[in-house]
Length: 180
Image 1 (tube, rainbow, N blue to C red):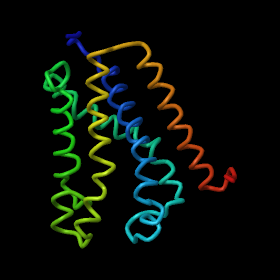
Image 2: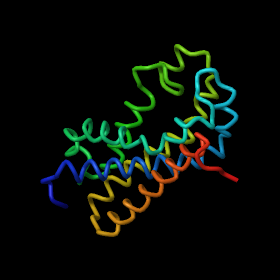
Image 3: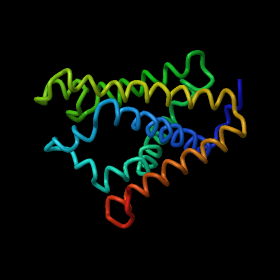
């Protein structure tokens, strides 16, 4: 089992770093697999692919990590140290964050109803978000069930690299540094 006397700081770090790491990895894969440059640059509602805001996205995921941590904190006993807890967390995240958002987000029930985006184009996004949320849920629960110093070290290194690359992207998008 484990210690059920959680500290919010630890919970925040594990939720946030798990989110940032899986978000970054799946984002890189999806960017290439789904040709995000073409999608972003041809959209009237999305920022241009070379926008500083797009480059800042991974670093700004710290804010989503805080929101996830605050929202999940009161429900943690329902998935941490529970049989198939990661599946419970994954189901919660998929249900509330992907399928049933309150906005007409692409791939959500509201998106299918209220947007003109073809269904296939909306479903393509699942290639990124469904595995990302599954990896996130698995990583969080695994980390609590198998706490080791190496996970803390790896998370600091990987989050730092992701934030650093994001900041370098912002500098490049603003013309402060040149990218070959």
